[in-house]
Image (cartoon, rainbow, N blue to C red; front, side, top):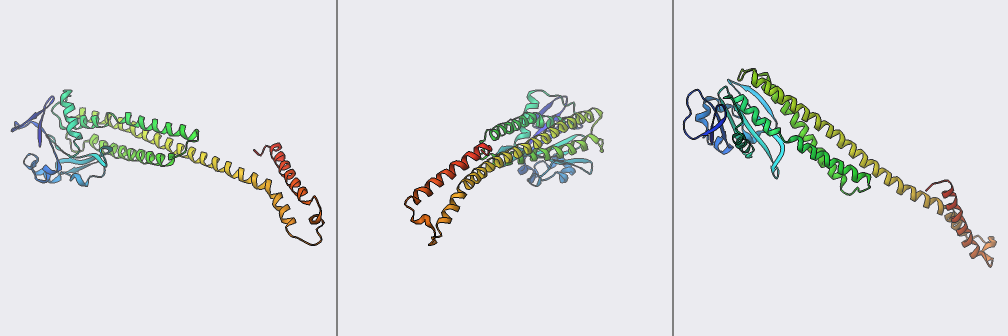
Length: 305
């Protein structure tokens, strides 16, 4: 477990903390299960959300504290998302993080000497701000992938495009759900029903809510773009299938008279004079070639191909 004093800036401490100082505790689920942090969290410890049960972003009001979870679609390793649980009071902020993401964010805040002004609310705002700071760049990368798939569909390069579009669509939906949940969580923090922080922190959360709202709008636009790309892909498939059906129809139309001719002379009636004609075979062959040429000329004339 790591312990930090929340002063004008964030600083790590090893021993006891002066009474009245705001404290930030950062630990893992294993340490939480061993209750290594119980002495620091005191009676609020029982309200700390269990990280393995985290599925959504949320903020819940408990007795004299605010707690919740944050789960992002961003993967740090294969099938492992960035997720952490938190508990906040007026002078205590505790975060349980197994992904290591919050540890990295905290190190960055300390390296950049970011101001937290002795407030747990301000520190949590800075952590959330750092968390969503590079999301717009990732959304732009998703948009670039959509444009590439759109160009491939227009060029007729349709191999594996459908599976790629569906994978991208699912990812965009995941980000959209994440921003919807995160927006509701930040709204809960902005309302400050428990009075854990002052007006300045409320303004910070209002700014963060606006930023998350813009990211949510961006994901909604990406979803619409993804649907359009899928419709374009389906349209290209339909055009290709229509082309194949057109060719088959033309071939069938051209050779249908030959089938009629073959069926006609295949009846072998005794009174068919052509069967005993010396040039009957050559005449049928010539008639067949003439019919095919005439049919092709008519098709060309009518611009059927």
